[in-house]
Length: 108
Image (cartoon, rainbow, N blue to C red; front, side, top):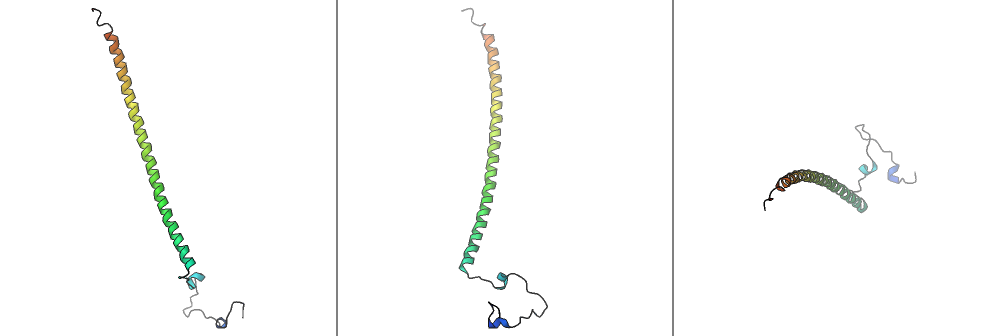
């Protein structure tokens, strides 16, 4: 008799009659479904998985927001550049007109 053996386990155990060997861990053979510590651990794992999924969604959302912001800034820069080009053309035109109007009004 071993240290952890009791009188019921002294009997020789026979494999199942169909010739199959027992498989699986000790937890699959002896399920501890009502253990509060196991239940708390399962709940923590479930909560961690849920938090990870939410974090993945938040990361994707943040990446999309950054892309949208960059696109908006590029568009704004392009519009500002175009507006500056038009302002420069307007300034050049007004300088040209100013030269032509300098000669006006000499007969006053």
